[in-house]
Length: 169
Figure 1: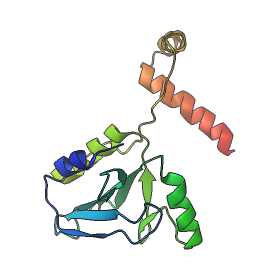
Figure 2 (figure 1 turned 90 degrees about the vertical axis):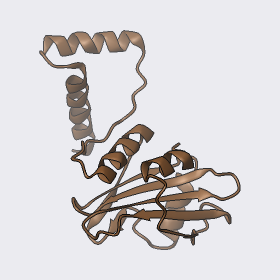
Figure 3 (figure 1 turned 45 degrees about the vertical axis):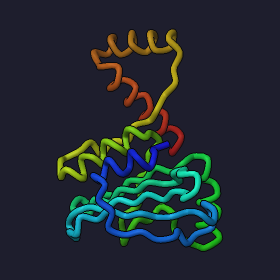
Figure 4 (figure 1 turned 120 degrees about the vertical axis):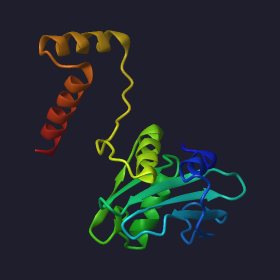
């Protein structure tokens, strides 16, 4: 999970607000820090962490210009957050108005998107999905990608889209 230090580096150590976190799901010592650039067409970032252990529960990035929001939840506390959201009858996906969070599975994916948002750069909106594949399967997939004249990444993306499409249908 992303550390408090990594979050601070992303926002260039610029803190604009802070407060006790008002939900119970992360415990009595949870605290929220925000970094907002002061521009309603700009960006803001939030980290929710434990003041005693420094465990990070959640990081958020809000790209107001492009109406996108990304979140990385600590997997050890995700169920607790979802349960409390359900108990409070709160849409846990909603960031603001008609914008939902895109929940990211990979720390580096969140960090890269956040760094680009801070810098005002265009960024890749695709979501990184970590895959743990054994060497034999990787070799087989590479051969299949080569047969279709695709890069390995293009081929894996196609396979995932096809399989997810089957699951949704």
